[in-house]
Image 1 (tube, rainbow, N blue to C red):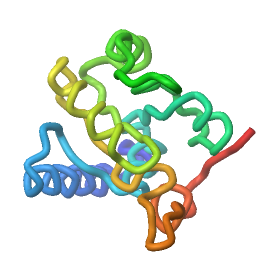
Image 2: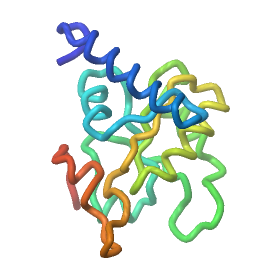
Image 3: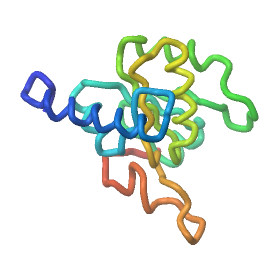
Image 4: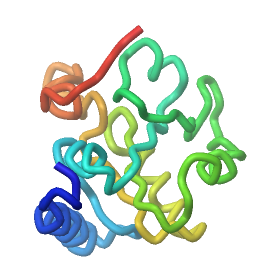
Length: 155
């Protein structure tokens, strides 16, 4: 359902909840979304998801369909991608809402902060990430995008 098809109130409520989460946690960007909220915004055309994991994660672990990859840190590197903002500008305009996704929500948090400071006022973090945080047995998968049953694909 797009905003033009009557979902504008639902989308606005999602963005408001995301903003409330950010304010309550003192986050330096527009908001924090659940994977399901992010998918709703993305499919409505109200925002663009950008995956910030490494290329091997994106290709081998799985990815959200039709979502660009801009590596926050390239595989094996110890420092963030120096071209991150330039690559971001190639896929999302600064005035467009952008939703960052990584494995567990940590790299995407940093990407949302950097994007905000670089002039993207509607930068959001997708909490839980693609695979979620580690559980008591040191495994991922109890939370996150895949655990929510949202669309994804794998090579």
